[in-house]
Image (cartoon, rainbow, N blue to C red):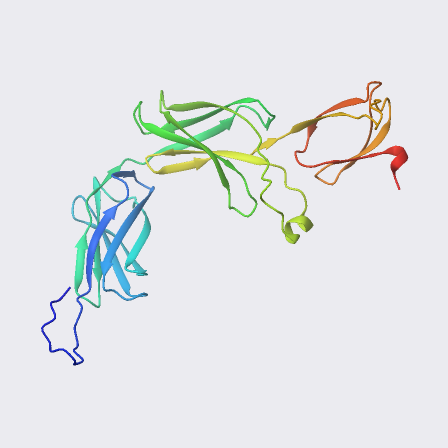
Length: 282
């Protein structure tokens, strides 16, 4: 901050110098084609001011240019490591209107990673199933740290992260087991649009991340079961009683209890359901 040397009881104009104070990669290394975060802090720079980012590799060759806008004296940018970057990558940040610039620390550039053949060992999951996830990972040595993320799929692309599992590459492959357990999102009330669109069954996919590069698996569907025991007010079982079952996907089924007033149904869509006994139907 400039030192004030003016007189008191008088309006004095003080010029505040704008500057780039900090340029840092959020990771130490990333593979070609991966996204790396870049954090930029500035001082006395107005919202919406232009900022220029030039990318240079280890040989000093320019491999990319970006233009961004500053907000609140900060900028977080996600930058894809260019295919032609060699050995390392630095970001040279400039404020064109203020003649201020700063260069980042070097980001180590790793060889491109090829992740393919992501597979679940089952097409459908049920409560308590032990699921195996596998993928082929090429161009990285054994022992390379990787990460498996399991997501609940959303048609609006706002997927929910369920869990993250650290793994290592062995023999150009990764493998991991996960015990499936369904958790209903009771706090999420569907909108009118979602209700009109219809029932969406729970679906899952897993993501493999290696050196900042990731790939996603195909969708895994979830099937549930329901078990019902029905007794009247006197505690007597609803032996062989017929009823109509309304499922969360809108399907109506005619079912009946056994002689003990019980029934178990497999491969059902998860969610709330309704039962109306045959003689109670309107």
